[in-house]
Length: 466
Image (cartoon, rainbow, N blue to C red; front, side):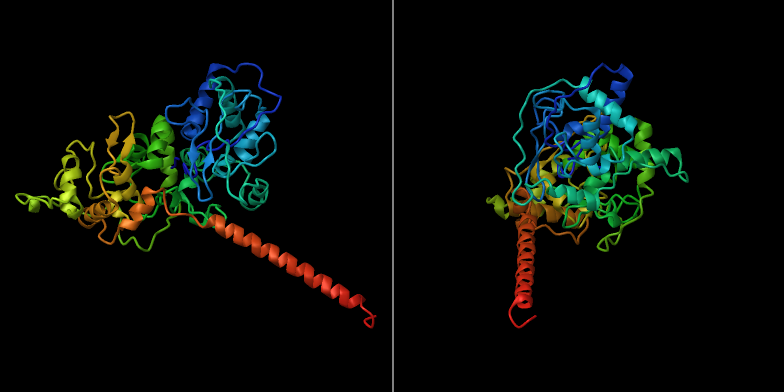
């Protein structure tokens, strides 16, 4: 399941599409447009190609990646700034091959590696929708400018040769129609692996660890394989459907960050049969277990009223000296209750039996405290405030450790330096420096080979060597 990487997200980066002097003709029927809109919603196109408060699909959203921000483009049918002059074949090439209309390559922040699974009929319906069902917007988003050497797009041709499987989805005759539908959606439009699969040094998905957990900017996209401890093996299909449709599954987890966006803009609008098909498929993904998980990540903790010990005792005047219970009482207890039980109707989750506190990977817990949760679904939605402007790095670390110790996995740790890194947008990546170093090494080797070859040539042709 995904969102926005924003590293790695929906129709996410029909990136930097340029126009050519050809366009679509005719107006398709309403049924085809409706189907195309549904497919575009399943692909979560709007989440990456729209800025908050901006026009849908007009682009301009920066998506953080380890090699710099990639800016989404205008994918409205504007003939000056969008894809209004794209032929259907050019649209298909961008969507499924990562090649835009001028022949240049897209970066894999646009998950064309997943969209390659789409059928011709579905691509046709999406093309019809984008050309005739979306309002054109003449806008010019800031172009993507990645640092050397990633600013050379021709590298992507080599990358595609190594890592792009361009074959469309092939149904498995040994599986049910429901399983095949779920596999088609999860591997294709929903592009679950784009966020939930770890990547190698070349930023390609590790196929041997499919859906075992990945990184989306500073957020951690957790393991969603069938493992009962690290993944969703102990979830019922209905719990998975609830999570995708509502953004939370009681006694399990709640969506935040990029996953909350995927629920808000995409998954909640899918037909119940499609959500159940995705759940059916995910329950069969080969289990991948993290050795650090000694029990199910949603089984840790119990109700604990640490606030009771503070009653009748005035906290230190300097809030920087407050302990975990005092911070919890001031910032959490009014919603999550003194014992961490959450609200009685389940609208506000319990903090125990909750993957947010049960994982040893604590980045998501820190980011939720910093940024809060803002998710709108068919139910009243969730609006948890963030405390980035109220709490220091050390206070958030103290509060987070209190939460994991009493309500979650006591082996989890949060440090003030970790909070500072996440507050600043995440720890810096060394990928650009490594790429430049690799280029220097390659160039040095080539020069050494040339020098050695010329030296041997001179030795063979010098006097006395004949």
